[in-house]
Image 1 (spheres, rainbow, N blue to C red):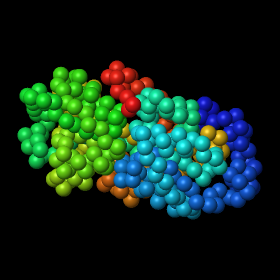
Image 2 (cartoon, rainbow, N blue to C red; image 1 turned 90 degrees about the vertical axis):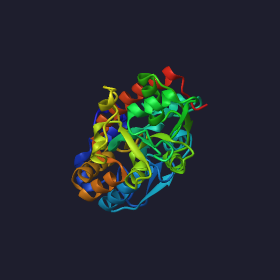
Image 3 (cartoon, rainbow, N blue to C red; image 1 turned 135 degrees about the vertical axis):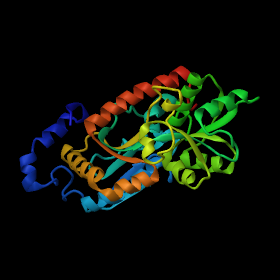
Image 4 (cartoon, rainbow, N blue to C red; image 1 turned 180 degrees about the horizontal axis):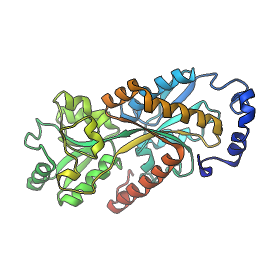
Amino acid sequence: MPSQHFTRRQWLAAGTAGALSTLGLSALAGNDTWPSKVIKMVVAFPAGGPTDTAARIVSQKLAERLGATIVVDNRPGASGSIGTASFIKSAPDGYTFSMFGMPALLAPILYKNNAYDPEKDFLSVATVYDLPMGIVVNPQVLPGVDSVKALVAHAKAAKTPLNYTSSGAGSFGHLAMEQLKDLGGFDMQHVPYRGSAPAVNDLLGGQIGIMFADLVAALPHIKAGKLRAIALSSNKGKAMLAGVKTVAEQGFPGFDFDSWGGLIAPLGTPAPLLARLNKELADLLANDKEIQAKLLQAGAIAAFQPGDAMHKRLLTDHARWSKVAKDKGISAV
């Protein structure tokens, strides 16, 4: 993994690989062989949301491989910034990691008092999943809206702006819909929720009719016929909803994106521990059919990338979506 992800001390530690064959990881992770106690997996989002769901699926299998217990610790609030700001202060001893979700990538530009920099305040370990998204509607509230074209026409004809929701102010769903509004020349009013799960609950209840949702939260209800998917954010979503066209295929070429999640570690975490996690995650996500199926059933796609690739992806997405947020004047406060 590239030098910019590790401190000089970590690379010196990594250089002792020959000694590790005799001493194991004990010299780098305490007096006992790592892992020798419970590992905490911080999730800076509510239980039941996409990051939480993926973290629990992956943690169960990863724990088996490591011979350890992994406990998910939900610390939601402020688009993931509260839990992430707390997490980066954790001891770099290999017993606290976090499943990083994309809202926490954008939180620093949405909150004036945000307490971390996603480009330098933690280590990228590996991407774990891609999270396709889709525009979904409540068919009871909007029975005639079955495509992006129909949505645009309905929104333009409405006497007052339609309401749509997402998992929060500045979320991928929010930013993507705002971008689509500009491209399509129509208007809708954003009603933010705190997480995907509560937003979907009110979508199901008919309090709101439209959502740009992650498929982890929406897929079960789409399959049950309670919600209708009218468009996907990218072709990756067709692995779950083969009959649904992408936004790009419905007249908006170039409109293509996915949310995603990955494992991060506190600065100073020993390089050999991160290398071990990379090895286990790479094999697990590429070869374990059960975890692939569980993620797919939940609405996510197993997608491993090593730490350097994850960091590059993080930088690219941070620049792309930060621009949208700034151009649209989107903030959480």
